[in-house]
Image (cartoon, rainbow over all chains, first blue to last red; front, top):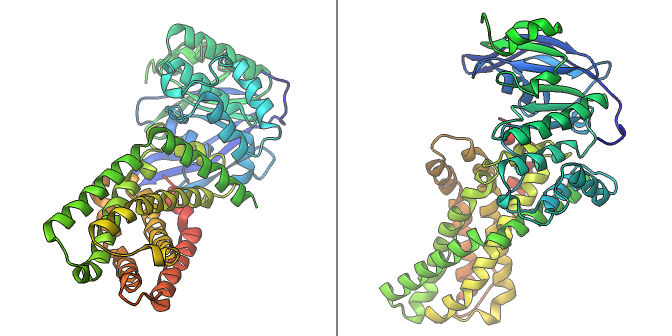
Amino acid sequence: MTAPGFSPTGIRFENIEKRYGGLYALRRVSLEVAAGECVAFAGRNGSGKTTLLRIAARLVRASAGAIGFLGQAGDRADALTRIGFVAHATMVYDELTAEENLMLFAKLQGIADAAARVAELLEEVGLLERRSSLVRTFSRGMRQRVAIARALLNEPAVLLLDEPSTGLDPEGITWLANTLRQARDAGRTILMSLHGESEISALATRAVRLDAGSVAADTRARSDMHAILTFAGA
Amino acid sequence: MALLADTRVLLGKELRTEFRSRELLTTTVVFILVVVVLFSFTFDPSAGESRRFGPGLLWLAFLFAASLMLQPCFLREQNNDTLSALRLSVQDPFAIFLAKLSANTVFLLLTEVLLLPVFAVLYNVHVLGVFPQLVLVLFLGSLGVAIPGTAFSAISAQARMRELMLPLLLLPLLTPVLIASTEATAALLDVRPELRRDWVGFLAGFDVVFLTALWLFGEYLLEE
């Protein structure tokens, strides 16, 4: 990853609740994630992992509670400049080339010298030679590389990743793990939702298990992480 | 001015993706041609009848075309969750609407302008003498269809019965636009052509009111 063009920051969730009608997706979730931490969220389907990450990205409005960056206000405009988000879907256009996709989002994010930044990222994710190919001609792994490049465009201090290894083959998972390791080592705060243990979960410095929308377990002890990530005893 | 800059970038994306796939334009142009040709052969209208019924048939065909065109407008953003990527990138979410409704208006206008010569030949009406005025009416009418159409496309894309939802919400709301557009077009195709300022004013007013409403409340339509 390039030299940090961001100020490291943590993120705080205060009594976050999300209700869909009478159904609770999240119940009073409070967490403080320090700058540079890499948090793996585990939990069964429907436990609230995706909702929590989408609330952190300001894509979903919480029904109650507050969210902010540590020591700063963190309104929507602020969040846009500090957050990089990789969703379950690729979040890029199949009908545009890799370069056109990245240029589109770079221009919207007001990135100075967008062309240079896009070229730099395409090289980092190994797609410089395929930059003029339509994304729909890419494999799932290549699309995920474009997705990661898109999320890194604005040099985010906080990376939110929702099951980032979905659809990746072992080689792709290794590439993703290396990319995330570099991001973590550069001081980015990483929050990611995962299913089970993998090369990617091994990067986590903290594991949180959500159960029915509540925090059921939270540890920084490596010895306890296995149980949390594999739901052992849940 | 970030709003205008973002709108310009997004409009470029809309036009590029459509002109690359030609998905909407091809379907709509073929559909609208079939409708106009079929009506022409079914009624075999005289010149007088054409002037009386033609504008109504024309706008009915445009309405069908619009409902085909508007449906995928936000639906396409759901395939890869690209709407979330846009929301994470733009300063003002209104830029997303502004770009989409501009693209929809351009596509509708393009379809209409392509159809006009066919309509003129089949229905024996003279459009060349009033072409600039006709384009003004087509523009205001198309904008009147595109503004609420784009808003309801955003709503219906998140609904369960989305295919049914859009026409159900949109068609009743568009009745005033269709009446005004038809009346203004009929006046232009009359033996003594006239640009009816009352109907044109109504269309402009409708566009301004709905654009303002979209600017005020559009952000909420994009929320999950």
